Length: 374
Image 1 (cartoon, rainbow, N blue to C red):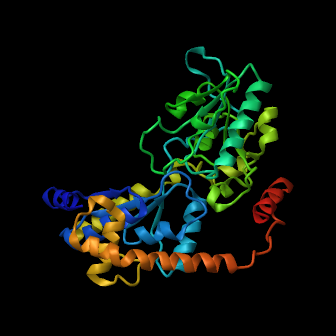
Image 2 (image 1 turned 90 degrees about the vertical axis):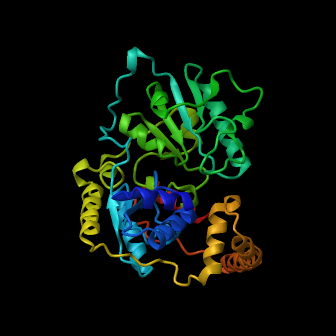
Image 3 (image 1 turned 135 degrees about the horizontal axis):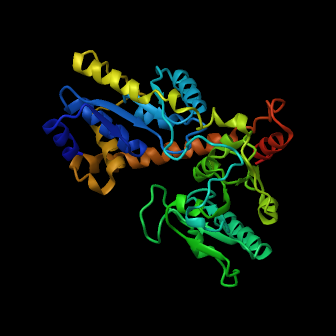
């Protein structure tokens, strides 16, 4: 952390992109505000699919000058949540690099005349989390491979064994493949674009790879066998035409995105992006000395001990300060007690009734009803 501050002091940039997990992002933003004279513009954001909006995403990054999102729907959701939390929104729109204009049903030609022969499953390290559910997916993929020997069914992992990922993977898919799996069920890594170049279809629970498939015109399927819920990151696909289940997968019934879903969900025209213009305006304000500091979402800072706790929990073993160790010893039991209280309170809340289904198509109503049923 000190090295970052020293670098910003020695060679001040006009803007800094704070692309870090929440607690570390909050720490960096706070330290720049405190310790860097004539500080640079602070830009932050969330990668991939960030819908539905989550308060923690705002909470840790509230003091950034600009928060970049990737769809009109996300911007609206985060603005609403921000205002509800007493903060003035500062969200901007950018296009995901792989969300190029899509033409539903028009598959891009393969390179060098390669044959499209692969059904690609985009694995995720944390969705679903239950090992039995992950094993079920492997079972369905094996059934698909047996039913369609003309296809290669590819479990496309995000990283090689042992490679670091943002989300730790407890039950890697390669470990779940049975010894008697058909020979055309394979596990591979590598760039998703290369896999999509040979893909008949892309299958996932909620990976952003489905957006890359849509952009390439490759049919897709988002599995809803585990429900539709925020923790599955698949609510955004309700209304897209892409949701289906294991029976669709095994039968080879893949979907084409509904055109009316595209503009509001990651496939807006590039002319609607405003992040670059917003950053330039903030840099002009900085040069003129009129850049205003945004307030933190954290209302009670708790003084030096609280800041030491935040630094210790964000940096872990990389924070070797004595005050950080003291804060950890004092704060850990308090945090566990709070977590226990929240868990008890959540368990005691009644399940809300399903509402607002009348505006959805029949298939989407079934998805939301399945979500609310648990």
